[in-house]
Image 1 (cartoon, chains in turn red, purple):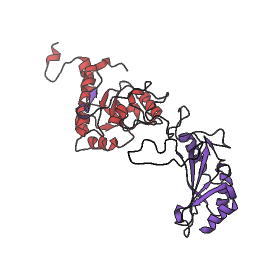
Image 2: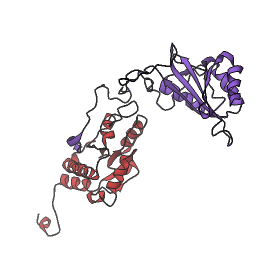
Image 3: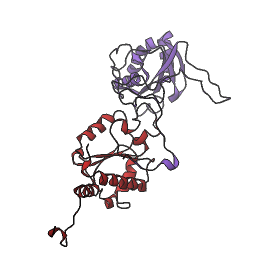
Image 4: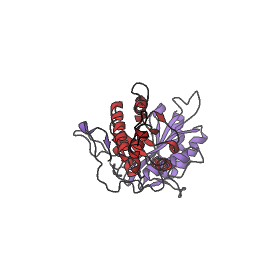
Length: 157
Length: 193
C-alpha cells in the first residue's frame, strides 16, 4: 500500500473507474430521420455544445458507437433498418429516444408509423418534446451518464 | 377543345357518360369497361403524359358533416371508388391550359378497369399504389404487388373503413390500447432504470 499513497496516484474501484470512463466518452450514432434532427444539430453544435459532456463525437458507423440516438419519426419501413443498426452496435450500448415520435409515435397515430421505438428495441432514455429543447436533451444526457456510471461493469446487454 | 368533346361523346357513344368543364378543368366520365379504349384513343390523339392516376373512396361521403352542411354522395348505386386519370399534352403551346383532361370512372366494388401501363409506363407504379392504398385491382393485373407498404401489411389504409389507429401484426404494439400521450409538465426526459 505504501506506493499507492504516493502523490500522483489515485485509487478507485474498478466499477467506478469503468463507469466514469464510459460516461464521459460517449460515442454516439445519430439515427436522424426527421425534423428533430435540427434540434439535435443545435444541441451538438457549439452554442449548446454537447461536447462538454464528452458526447461530442458522432460516429457514422454503428460498430464504433456506444449510444444510439434515434432522432425523428420511425416508419414501418424504417423499422427493420433501425433494428439492424441496433444489432450492429457492440456492447455495451444504450438507446436514446429523441422526440415524441420515437417515444410514443407522437401525433402520428396512423398506419405507417411505429408507435414508439420500444416496440422494436430496448430504450434507456426517453426525451419527449416536439422537438425537445436542447436543455431537455442535455438534461437527458446527464441522466444517461448517471445510469452509465451506476452500471459500471455490470452492464449486460 | 370542343373537338375533344365531340370526339369523345360521339366517337365512343355510351362509353362516355358525360363531358364537363372548360380548358384545364375539362373532365370526362367514362364506363370502366371502356376506360382503356378511351384512354388509348386519347393517347393516340396527343395526350402523351399521364400526370396522375388516383382513386377516391366515397363510402363515407356526406357523413359526419357539421350541422347545416349537406352533401349528396355522387357515387352511383353499387360503386364506392372513383378512379381519376389526369392527362396532359406535353407541349409548350397547348400543354399549359388546353391540353389537359381528367378522365373519371366509377368502378363496381374493387374491380378496376384494365391496366394502362403499356400506354404510359408510369401507370405501373400508380396502379400499384392504388392497389396498395385502396385495394382496387386492375382486371389484367391479378398478381399486382404493393408499392409503398410491405407484403405483411393487412388491409388498405386509405379506405375510409380502415381504423385510423389500427396496429399492424408485424410491428405492433400487439394491443390496440392507445399509447400514453405526454403533455405539459410530463414532457421531461425519463430514464429507464
